[in-house]
Amino acid sequence: MSPPPSPPSSPSSRFATGSLESNKLAPFNPIDSSAQTSALSFLSLTSSDVLFDLGCGDGRLLLAAARGTPGLRCVGVEYDRVYYDRAVSACEGAEGVEIIHGDVVNVDLSSATAVFVYLVPNGLKLVEEKLRGVLERGGRIVSYMFSVPGVVAKETGSAKGGCKVSLYDRSSLPGSPADQLKSSAADDEPRPDLPSPLSPSTPTLPP
Ligand SMILES: C[S@@+](CC[C@H](N)C(=O)[O-])C[C@H]1O[C@@H](n2cnc3c(N)ncnc32)[C@H](O)[C@@H]1O
Image (cartoon, rainbow, N blue to C red):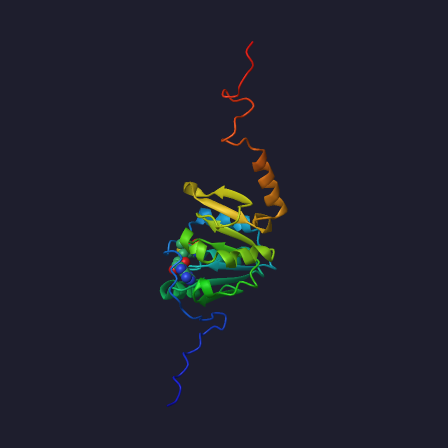
């Protein structure tokens, strides 16, 4: 029996098709333009960056990033065929943008210097190790709405409607000098289980 014919190749080699798995890390809910502006400003992209949007939806953040930073390489990963197709057509004319049809859980982030995520907490948990690897290699991550587990944001801002935008970098990793400073500052905080020198429960000498 002859092997099944291989699928037709994409009209543009910039658009790769990956394997599909079924880890649902978030429903489609595109980022609004004000949050997108905050996220891109936190990422401080340069032409030598490689930006990944993990669960890129219709590709709007990548398109804005590519337009705003000529020379930037952008990679979107989207497992839903409908949004993948939308992202491919939205980014068709944009230089340096690649959209992968695949599962974020299986994607290789070794080339990523900057990552954007808008995923729900359980979804972030599934890619926690991958995200930590990006920070260990000196990359930065911006997460919209939810916190990346296991690390401490370097900076947090709020977009329109009060939604959180958080920036993470190497200093966010547990055990980093910045983290140790944060911990020693926390050690200096009064412990609620110990009487404070100024608390009313501190025994005082009778007059
Ligand atoms: C909240 S939307 C964010 C879309 C886009 N990043 C934005 O900010 O406009 C999350 C996206 O992740 C996609 N997604 C969820 N799980 C995924 C997975 N395991 N692999 C790839 N994409 C996934 C969804 O289909 C959806 O498009």
